[in-house]
Length: 329
Ligand SMILES: Nc1nc2c(ncn2[C@@H]2O[C@H](COP(=O)(O)OP(=O)(O)OP(=O)(O)O)[C@@H](O)[C@H]2O)c(=O)[nH]1
Ligand SMILES: [Mg+2]
Image (cartoon, rainbow, N blue to C red):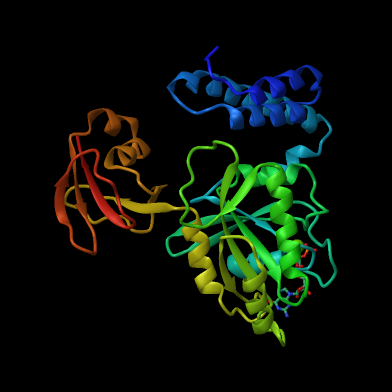
Protein backbone atom coordinates (compact mmCIF):
# COMPACT_ATOMS: atom_id res chain seq x y z
CA UNK A 1 0.00 0.00 0.00
CA UNK A 2 1.65 3.28 -1.05
CA UNK A 3 2.22 5.91 1.61
CA UNK A 4 0.78 9.45 1.60
CA UNK A 5 -2.82 8.57 0.86
CA UNK A 6 -4.99 11.44 2.04
CA UNK A 7 -7.52 10.94 4.86
CA UNK A 8 -10.45 11.17 2.40
CA UNK A 9 -9.12 8.05 0.73
CA UNK A 10 -9.65 6.01 3.88
CA UNK A 11 -13.04 7.59 4.54
CA UNK A 12 -14.25 6.74 1.04
CA UNK A 13 -12.74 3.27 1.18
CA UNK A 14 -14.76 2.57 4.33
CA UNK A 15 -17.95 3.16 2.32
CA UNK A 16 -17.15 0.11 0.21
CA UNK A 17 -18.37 -2.19 2.97
CA UNK A 18 -21.90 -0.87 2.63
CA UNK A 19 -21.94 -0.76 -1.20
CA UNK A 20 -24.34 -3.27 -2.68
CA UNK A 21 -24.91 -2.55 -6.34
CA UNK A 22 -22.34 -2.39 -9.15
CA UNK A 23 -23.25 1.25 -9.66
CA UNK A 24 -22.54 2.14 -6.02
CA UNK A 25 -19.21 0.37 -6.20
CA UNK A 26 -18.22 2.12 -9.44
CA UNK A 27 -19.08 5.43 -7.84
CA UNK A 28 -16.81 4.69 -4.87
CA UNK A 29 -13.93 3.45 -7.04
CA UNK A 30 -14.16 6.58 -9.16
CA UNK A 31 -14.06 8.79 -6.07
CA UNK A 32 -11.09 6.85 -4.74
CA UNK A 33 -9.16 7.36 -7.98
CA UNK A 34 -10.02 11.04 -7.82
CA UNK A 35 -8.40 11.50 -4.40
CA UNK A 36 -5.34 9.29 -4.91
CA UNK A 37 -2.33 11.50 -5.73
CA UNK A 38 -1.06 10.51 -9.17
CA UNK A 39 2.62 9.51 -9.23
CA UNK A 40 4.77 6.45 -9.86
CA UNK A 41 4.10 4.96 -6.43
CA UNK A 42 0.32 4.96 -6.94
CA UNK A 43 0.17 3.65 -10.54
CA UNK A 44 -0.60 0.12 -9.42
CA UNK A 45 -3.30 1.17 -6.99
CA UNK A 46 -5.03 3.28 -9.65
CA UNK A 47 -4.75 0.45 -12.16
CA UNK A 48 -6.33 -1.91 -9.63
CA UNK A 49 -9.34 0.40 -9.19
CA UNK A 50 -9.68 0.78 -12.95
CA UNK A 51 -9.84 -2.98 -13.24
CA UNK A 52 -12.43 -3.13 -10.49
CA UNK A 53 -14.50 -0.51 -12.32
CA UNK A 54 -14.34 -2.54 -15.53
CA UNK A 55 -15.37 -5.67 -13.65
CA UNK A 56 -18.21 -3.94 -11.82
CA UNK A 57 -19.42 -2.48 -15.15
CA UNK A 58 -19.46 -5.96 -16.66
CA UNK A 59 -21.31 -7.27 -13.64
CA UNK A 60 -23.76 -4.36 -13.79
CA UNK A 61 -24.35 -4.90 -17.48
CA UNK A 62 -24.90 -8.61 -17.01
CA UNK A 63 -27.51 -7.97 -14.34
CA UNK A 64 -29.14 -5.17 -16.30
CA UNK A 65 -29.33 -7.19 -19.48
CA UNK A 66 -31.27 -9.85 -17.66
CA UNK A 67 -33.61 -7.05 -16.71
CA UNK A 68 -33.55 -6.36 -20.45
CA UNK A 69 -33.12 -2.63 -20.31
CA UNK A 70 -29.46 -1.67 -20.35
CA UNK A 71 -28.58 -3.77 -23.37
CA UNK A 72 -30.51 -1.33 -25.50
CA UNK A 73 -28.62 1.60 -23.98
CA UNK A 74 -25.17 0.42 -24.95
CA UNK A 75 -24.20 1.47 -28.42
CA UNK A 76 -21.17 0.01 -30.07
CA UNK A 77 -18.88 2.61 -31.59
CA UNK A 78 -18.40 2.50 -35.35
CA UNK A 79 -16.86 4.91 -37.85
CA UNK A 80 -14.32 7.61 -37.01
CA UNK A 81 -15.83 8.16 -33.54
CA UNK A 82 -18.99 8.42 -31.45
CA UNK A 83 -20.68 11.72 -30.57
CA UNK A 84 -23.61 11.62 -28.14
CA UNK A 85 -26.36 14.25 -28.33
CA UNK A 86 -27.84 15.81 -25.21
CA UNK A 87 -30.59 18.35 -24.85
CA UNK A 88 -34.03 19.09 -23.45
CA UNK A 89 -37.36 17.87 -24.91
CA UNK A 90 -38.24 19.28 -28.34
CA UNK A 91 -34.89 21.09 -28.82
CA UNK A 92 -34.52 19.45 -32.21
CA UNK A 93 -31.94 16.74 -31.45
CA UNK A 94 -33.58 14.20 -33.73
CA UNK A 95 -34.17 16.86 -36.40
CA UNK A 96 -30.45 17.68 -36.40
CA UNK A 97 -29.49 14.00 -36.56
CA UNK A 98 -31.92 13.56 -39.42
CA UNK A 99 -30.55 16.58 -41.32
CA UNK A 100 -26.90 15.61 -40.76
CA UNK A 101 -27.24 11.94 -41.58
CA UNK A 102 -30.15 11.79 -44.03
CA UNK A 103 -31.61 8.91 -41.99
CA UNK A 104 -35.31 8.42 -41.33
CA UNK A 105 -35.27 9.66 -37.72
CA UNK A 106 -38.56 10.20 -35.93
CA UNK A 107 -39.28 13.87 -35.30
CA UNK A 108 -42.46 15.37 -33.81
CA UNK A 109 -43.71 18.60 -32.30
CA UNK A 110 -44.37 17.05 -28.91
CA UNK A 111 -41.78 16.26 -26.22
CA UNK A 112 -40.38 12.78 -25.51
CA UNK A 113 -40.63 11.64 -29.11
CA UNK A 114 -37.29 9.84 -28.80
CA UNK A 115 -37.53 7.04 -26.25
CA UNK A 116 -34.29 5.12 -26.76
CA UNK A 117 -30.79 6.11 -27.81
CA UNK A 118 -30.06 5.16 -31.41
CA UNK A 119 -26.98 5.48 -33.64
CA UNK A 120 -26.86 7.10 -37.10
CA UNK A 121 -23.89 7.71 -39.37
CA UNK A 122 -23.02 11.26 -40.41
CA UNK A 123 -20.85 11.57 -43.51
CA UNK A 124 -18.06 14.13 -43.37
CA UNK A 125 -15.93 14.33 -46.51
CA UNK A 126 -14.45 10.82 -46.77
CA UNK A 127 -15.29 9.51 -43.28
CA UNK A 128 -18.37 8.77 -41.19
CA UNK A 129 -19.04 9.90 -37.64
CA UNK A 130 -21.50 8.05 -35.43
CA UNK A 131 -24.14 10.32 -33.89
CA UNK A 132 -26.19 8.91 -31.04
CA UNK A 133 -29.67 10.45 -30.88
CA UNK A 134 -30.96 10.34 -27.31
CA UNK A 135 -34.14 10.80 -25.31
CA UNK A 136 -34.45 14.26 -23.76
CA UNK A 137 -32.51 15.22 -20.63
CA UNK A 138 -32.54 18.18 -18.25
CA UNK A 139 -31.00 18.82 -14.83
CA UNK A 140 -34.03 17.18 -13.21
CA UNK A 141 -34.68 14.52 -15.78
CA UNK A 142 -31.78 12.20 -16.49
CA UNK A 143 -31.87 8.44 -16.26
CA UNK A 144 -28.83 6.78 -14.68
CA UNK A 145 -27.65 5.16 -17.91
CA UNK A 146 -27.30 8.54 -19.62
CA UNK A 147 -24.10 9.76 -17.88
CA UNK A 148 -22.59 6.32 -18.47
CA UNK A 149 -23.27 6.69 -22.17
CA UNK A 150 -21.70 10.15 -22.17
CA UNK A 151 -18.62 8.76 -20.44
CA UNK A 152 -18.03 6.16 -23.11
CA UNK A 153 -18.73 8.47 -26.08
CA UNK A 154 -15.84 10.35 -27.65
CA UNK A 155 -17.57 13.71 -27.38
CA UNK A 156 -20.84 15.46 -26.63
CA UNK A 157 -23.10 17.58 -28.84
CA UNK A 158 -25.35 19.70 -26.63
CA UNK A 159 -28.48 20.99 -28.32
CA UNK A 160 -30.24 24.16 -27.13
CA UNK A 161 -33.68 25.38 -28.18
CA UNK A 162 -33.43 29.08 -29.11
CA UNK A 163 -37.21 29.26 -28.93
CA UNK A 164 -37.09 28.59 -25.19
CA UNK A 165 -36.32 31.63 -22.99
CA UNK A 166 -34.94 29.27 -20.33
CA UNK A 167 -32.43 27.65 -22.69
CA UNK A 168 -29.34 28.80 -20.77
CA UNK A 169 -30.68 27.65 -17.40
CA UNK A 170 -31.62 24.27 -18.86
CA UNK A 171 -28.14 23.75 -20.30
CA UNK A 172 -26.56 24.74 -17.00
CA UNK A 173 -28.84 22.20 -15.34
CA UNK A 174 -27.67 19.46 -17.69
CA UNK A 175 -24.00 20.39 -17.20
CA UNK A 176 -24.54 20.47 -13.42
CA UNK A 177 -26.16 17.06 -13.33
CA UNK A 178 -23.32 15.61 -15.42
CA UNK A 179 -20.80 17.28 -13.11
CA UNK A 180 -22.38 15.39 -10.21
CA UNK A 181 -21.45 12.25 -12.14
CA UNK A 182 -17.93 13.72 -12.45
CA UNK A 183 -18.27 14.58 -16.13
CA UNK A 184 -16.73 17.94 -16.94
CA UNK A 185 -17.61 19.55 -20.28
CA UNK A 186 -14.59 21.08 -22.00
CA UNK A 187 -13.73 22.85 -25.25
CA UNK A 188 -13.16 20.94 -28.47
CA UNK A 189 -9.45 21.74 -28.40
CA UNK A 190 -8.96 20.86 -24.72
CA UNK A 191 -6.45 18.24 -23.80
CA UNK A 192 -8.22 15.11 -22.65
CA UNK A 193 -5.89 12.67 -20.92
CA UNK A 194 -6.81 9.01 -20.46
CA UNK A 195 -9.94 8.74 -18.35
CA UNK A 196 -8.63 10.12 -15.10
CA UNK A 197 -11.45 11.50 -13.06
CA UNK A 198 -13.42 13.58 -13.52
CA UNK A 199 -14.15 12.58 -17.09
CA UNK A 200 -13.41 15.42 -19.44
CA UNK A 201 -15.73 15.44 -22.43
CA UNK A 202 -15.09 17.62 -25.44
CA UNK A 203 -18.35 19.45 -26.06
CA UNK A 204 -19.92 21.57 -28.75
CA UNK A 205 -23.18 23.47 -28.45
CA UNK A 206 -25.62 23.57 -31.34
CA UNK A 207 -28.09 26.37 -30.62
CA UNK A 208 -30.97 25.19 -32.80
CA UNK A 209 -33.96 26.97 -34.36
CA UNK A 210 -32.01 30.10 -35.39
CA UNK A 211 -34.72 30.53 -38.06
CA UNK A 212 -37.30 31.52 -35.40
CA UNK A 213 -38.19 35.15 -34.98
CA UNK A 214 -36.10 36.63 -32.19
CA UNK A 215 -33.67 33.70 -32.25
CA UNK A 216 -30.53 35.74 -33.13
CA UNK A 217 -31.14 37.83 -30.05
CA UNK A 218 -31.83 34.70 -27.99
CA UNK A 219 -28.49 33.33 -29.23
CA UNK A 220 -26.65 36.45 -28.03
CA UNK A 221 -28.36 36.19 -24.66
CA UNK A 222 -27.46 32.52 -24.44
CA UNK A 223 -23.82 33.39 -25.14
CA UNK A 224 -23.86 35.93 -22.34
CA UNK A 225 -25.57 33.67 -19.81
CA UNK A 226 -23.89 30.36 -20.43
CA UNK A 227 -21.24 29.12 -18.12
CA UNK A 228 -19.66 26.37 -20.22
CA UNK A 229 -16.36 26.91 -22.02
CA UNK A 230 -17.50 25.08 -25.18
CA UNK A 231 -17.82 26.47 -28.68
CA UNK A 232 -21.33 27.49 -29.79
CA UNK A 233 -22.85 27.41 -33.25
CA UNK A 234 -26.23 28.81 -34.26
CA UNK A 235 -28.01 26.37 -36.55
CA UNK A 236 -31.38 25.43 -37.97
CA UNK A 237 -32.30 21.85 -38.65
CA UNK A 238 -35.35 23.18 -40.45
CA UNK A 239 -33.69 25.52 -42.98
CA UNK A 240 -30.24 23.90 -43.01
CA UNK A 241 -28.52 27.07 -41.86
CA UNK A 242 -25.17 26.43 -40.15
CA UNK A 243 -25.30 22.68 -40.74
CA UNK A 244 -22.09 22.43 -42.80
CA UNK A 245 -19.98 24.28 -40.19
CA UNK A 246 -21.68 22.08 -37.58
CA UNK A 247 -20.76 18.91 -39.48
CA UNK A 248 -17.10 20.02 -39.64
CA UNK A 249 -17.08 21.04 -35.97
CA UNK A 250 -18.57 17.67 -34.93
CA UNK A 251 -15.78 15.90 -36.79
CA UNK A 252 -13.29 18.28 -35.11
CA UNK A 253 -14.57 17.14 -31.69
CA UNK A 254 -13.14 13.70 -32.33
CA UNK A 255 -9.59 14.99 -32.62
CA UNK A 256 -8.55 12.40 -35.13
CA UNK A 257 -6.39 12.63 -38.24
CA UNK A 258 -7.17 10.90 -41.52
CA UNK A 259 -4.16 9.29 -43.10
CA UNK A 260 -3.96 7.44 -46.39
CA UNK A 261 -1.86 4.38 -46.93
CA UNK A 262 0.01 4.16 -50.21
CA UNK A 263 1.70 1.23 -51.91
CA UNK A 264 5.04 2.11 -53.60
CA UNK A 265 4.48 3.02 -57.22
CA UNK A 266 0.71 3.37 -56.79
CA UNK A 267 -1.67 6.19 -55.93
CA UNK A 268 -3.07 6.59 -52.41
CA UNK A 269 -6.59 5.33 -51.75
CA UNK A 270 -8.24 8.58 -50.71
CA UNK A 271 -11.67 7.12 -50.13
CA UNK A 272 -10.50 4.77 -47.38
CA UNK A 273 -8.54 6.71 -44.76
CA UNK A 274 -7.30 5.33 -41.49
CA UNK A 275 -8.55 7.48 -38.63
CA UNK A 276 -6.03 7.81 -35.81
CA UNK A 277 -5.96 9.98 -32.70
CA UNK A 278 -4.35 13.38 -33.20
CA UNK A 279 -0.70 13.00 -32.20
CA UNK A 280 -0.39 9.49 -33.66
CA UNK A 281 2.94 8.53 -35.18
CA UNK A 282 3.98 6.50 -38.23
CA UNK A 283 4.36 3.56 -35.84
CA UNK A 284 0.74 3.92 -34.65
CA UNK A 285 -0.35 3.84 -38.27
CA UNK A 286 1.74 0.72 -38.92
CA UNK A 287 -0.04 -0.95 -36.00
CA UNK A 288 -3.42 0.00 -37.44
CA UNK A 289 -2.52 -1.40 -40.87
CA UNK A 290 -1.18 -4.78 -39.82
CA UNK A 291 0.86 -6.24 -37.00
CA UNK A 292 3.54 -7.34 -39.50
CA UNK A 293 4.08 -3.74 -40.44
CA UNK A 294 4.41 -2.76 -36.81
CA UNK A 295 7.02 -5.45 -36.18
CA UNK A 296 9.08 -4.91 -39.31
CA UNK A 297 8.71 -1.20 -40.01
CA UNK A 298 11.96 0.42 -41.17
CA UNK A 299 10.88 3.87 -42.27
CA UNK A 300 8.07 5.66 -44.11
CA UNK A 301 7.68 8.26 -46.80
CA UNK A 302 5.13 11.04 -46.35
CA UNK A 303 3.38 13.29 -48.83
CA UNK A 304 0.99 16.13 -48.04
CA UNK A 305 -0.57 19.12 -49.69
CA UNK A 306 1.36 21.59 -47.55
CA UNK A 307 5.01 20.78 -48.12
CA UNK A 308 6.11 17.16 -48.04
CA UNK A 309 6.81 15.29 -51.21
CA UNK A 310 7.85 11.79 -50.28
CA UNK A 311 9.99 12.86 -47.33
CA UNK A 312 11.65 9.92 -45.59
CA UNK A 313 10.64 9.90 -41.88
CA UNK A 314 11.20 7.58 -38.94
CA UNK A 315 8.67 5.76 -36.76
CA UNK A 316 8.21 8.64 -34.31
CA UNK A 317 7.07 11.06 -36.98
CA UNK A 318 3.75 12.63 -35.91
CA UNK A 319 1.15 12.44 -38.66
CA UNK A 320 -1.07 15.32 -39.76
CA UNK A 321 -4.59 15.16 -41.18
CA UNK A 322 -4.58 13.96 -44.81
CA UNK A 323 -0.95 12.81 -44.84
CA UNK A 324 -0.25 10.12 -47.43
CA UNK A 325 2.04 7.46 -46.00
CA UNK A 326 4.09 4.74 -47.64
CA UNK A 327 5.26 2.21 -45.06
CA UNK A 328 8.53 0.42 -45.77
CA UNK A 329 9.44 -2.84 -44.07
N1 LIG B 1 -38.44 26.30 -36.31
C1 LIG B 1 -37.72 25.23 -36.14
N2 LIG B 1 -38.28 24.10 -35.64
C2 LIG B 1 -37.49 23.02 -35.47
C3 LIG B 1 -36.11 23.03 -35.79
N3 LIG B 1 -35.61 21.81 -35.49
C4 LIG B 1 -36.61 21.07 -35.01
N4 LIG B 1 -37.76 21.79 -35.00
C5 LIG B 1 -39.09 21.34 -34.56
O1 LIG B 1 -39.04 21.09 -33.17
C6 LIG B 1 -39.87 19.99 -32.85
C7 LIG B 1 -39.11 18.94 -32.09
O2 LIG B 1 -38.14 18.36 -32.93
P1 LIG B 1 -37.42 16.98 -32.58
O3 LIG B 1 -36.30 16.84 -33.54
O4 LIG B 1 -38.38 15.87 -32.47
O5 LIG B 1 -36.85 17.36 -31.13
P2 LIG B 1 -36.10 16.41 -30.09
O6 LIG B 1 -35.11 17.27 -29.36
O7 LIG B 1 -35.54 15.21 -30.75
O8 LIG B 1 -37.26 16.04 -29.10
P3 LIG B 1 -37.39 14.77 -28.08
O9 LIG B 1 -37.13 13.53 -28.87
O10 LIG B 1 -38.74 14.86 -27.54
O11 LIG B 1 -36.35 15.01 -27.05
C8 LIG B 1 -40.44 19.48 -34.18
O12 LIG B 1 -41.72 20.05 -34.35
C9 LIG B 1 -39.48 20.02 -35.20
O13 LIG B 1 -40.07 20.21 -36.47
C10 LIG B 1 -35.55 24.23 -36.31
O14 LIG B 1 -34.36 24.35 -36.62
N5 LIG B 1 -36.39 25.28 -36.46
MG1 LIG C 1 -35.89 13.24 -30.45
